[in-house]
Length: 435
Image (tube, rainbow, N blue to C red):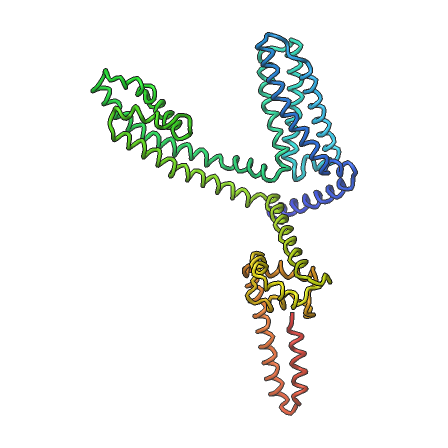
């Protein structure tokens, strides 16, 4: 057995083990409680309130420090309660999932939650030390750091909200694009800063007593100041008219150069940056399996509702069956015809469409038959449809070839056989060759 075979065998063994463990724990009541939607919603609400309490606690501590007073111990008690709730939730999940907590599909999230619970306990202990006066400055700084890290727990609440989760994932995935965006914008600003500073240097050297020198020094006193000025001009930090006015005293060409810089950044570079972020978000949406499943289910449910509404309107006699006459009469309304076309169904050949929907050839279709047919026939022909047609045609061609060969063979070997016998033999061969 090769090394690859050993790896495949171990992988298969792990898959079987995971399946057995999952089937075992899913039968437990505690598993169903921990995995239930009310439990997830409740914990998400607790996480949101905990994040709110962190801000309120920080605000109360700042107010106490400003007033040279001790913070209210109510905040410490509240922090202990939140830590106890999160610790209890983690213990319940460990008891419910058992080994799957450490080796299951969500093991990374579980590790993340475990670290956050440990940090919560450390934060509570250090915070109480600071309240009791037994802590030092290093402990106080540690409290601030740990409390900031605990805010990351909001990521757990984000998992349950598809759109918000996609937004967060898009921001994370756009990190590299953001860095390159910074490089490009910095390079463009550095180029224009070099042009402006060169002209300002010559102007100040030629006119040392010019009263505009103070304004030039405020906005363009150094490379860093000039780059900050240009960045604020395109980001709203300062009105670009105010940043351009000192350049008017240097030369009128710098006014045109500054206007071109604003135009180039607003309508060129920034639009490209936005499109890059939109593309990154689209790529993340394509890779997010849960988002794709949720989106497809919603789209399918919405389409089914529209088809059911159309069927109910077309079924005039409320019999639960749609006849060709009712279907044809309903499509005579131009608005109805346009609405049916909006469902990605071609109504130019309505009778042919109805025949395709009427699978059992009874000249009427039920709701399920109508719904299944519309889902099957909507949109343009896909690659799988074309390949299935090619497959069926190839299979039919092979059957016809076999029948022709059989007919020639029978006619050659037994020329006196009747046509009926020959037909029976051909049909038998055709049945044998059919899939």
